[in-house]
Image (cartoon, rainbow, N blue to C red; front, side):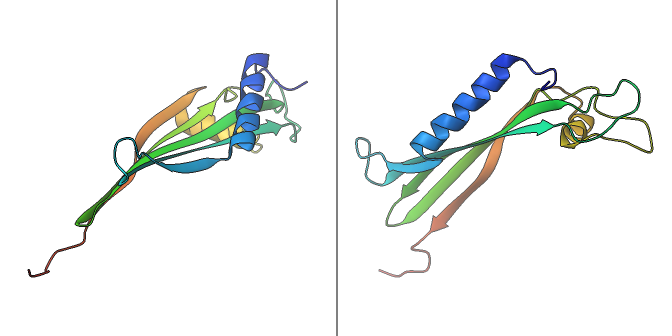
Length: 143
């Protein structure tokens, strides 16, 4: 009924959604044990998409689901002379459908098919530097 996705992915996705709703989606915490100038933050956004809209011809699959996540973590140092901020991100698409693209003129049967077509992987994840900056506060100041 819900496609070829295993029950484990559904349970993990539901557990992630519930844990995020219960704990708040993001938080920034000052690390006073190390220094009051240091703070760390993190967030997790999860979506679960279910598709069963199209009426494909042949053996193409329009009844599927997949999970998408975006996790971010950052570190900030605020000082009198400068501020430093670094944020990393992990984006993941889990359990994309491999048979959800029909021949023309019908084409892709939902976003899962589009994501699979562009990534060519059933599970795709990447970690990268989202943003980072250095703010110099005392440039040009004379003593």
